[in-house]
Amino acid sequence: MTERGRRRSTSIEKRRRVFRWARIAITLAAVAYLAARVDPGEVIAAWQRLSAGAALFALTVAFAAVGVGIVRWRLLLRAYGAIDVPSWARLGHLYFVGHFYNTYVPGGVGGDVLRGVASRKAFGNLSLAGATTGVAVVFIERVLGVSALLAMAACAYFIRPLPGLENVGLWAGLGLGAGVGALGGIALAPELAPWLPKKLAEPLRALPRFYSMWPFIGAIVASLIIHFLNIVAGHAIMHSLDPAVQLSSSAVAMPLVSASGFFPFTVGGAGVREAAFAALYGTVRVPEATAYAGSLSFWAMQLVTAGVGGLVNLCMPVSGGADDR
Image (cartoon, rainbow, N blue to C red; front, side):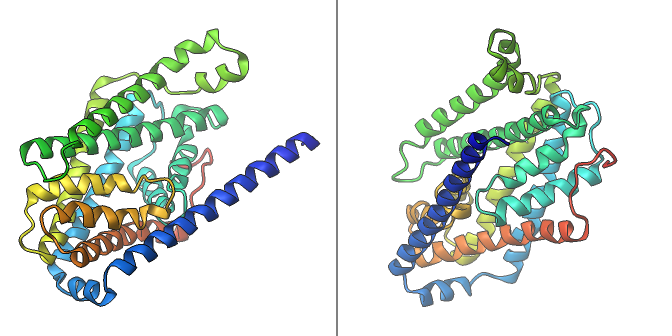
């Protein structure tokens, strides 16, 4: 590596380190602010109302959502022309380990990159181009997930609006438009490559080409099922804590709560997620302490499902070699 390259690498690493510590600081500040708003004893008292049956049901539903996520990933690999789709066992292995890294490692995307790189053989190429294609498919999976999330929130809102959330339809529409634009951009990028400079053209040529509509439609349906299951899991928790909470309210609140997890300036959406629970369920008169208890319970459920991925990786570390099936 040249001296200029070393300086550039050092500069990039320094920026990453600063951003990482800034996210941790913002997360701690957000959590401290929320803790100052409510007596922790009230949150603990509210949390103790969560029944074991509701917690177990929510956890079971959360694992089912992970299973549907594996199906969605396989469908997208088919839709984008994978020629050597990994076995169900290999996909499940990578998905759980990726879920672990996305949940436990600051950044929220490390698991996506891992899945994309480790699955590059599906496109018949173990080089950087294959890795780019694999990561792009995982990115498409994310876009579909967010789009389905926004669509469900908007539909639920139009059926039964929550007070104070009059702009949900507008923001959901803008988000869906951005998602469609991202998918369209990925589809057009390889076609534009021949007219672009070499440095820009090479990564664009590696982006996946769309081959099959039916698996793609199946992936959209899977995304809707995943978010419906998340709504059910979240509602089971909140209804146990406050029986007055109705499923229609959770159908609007939970997709927006899930969207808070994509907030880039906190670790895993911590602080933002709790604020979202309090604000959204507060519109139906759920006490703030109860909302925080629900948020922490929902987060604990995510930690458990992701923790399974950590155990899987401990027993069977992920590799991306040619012999992996």
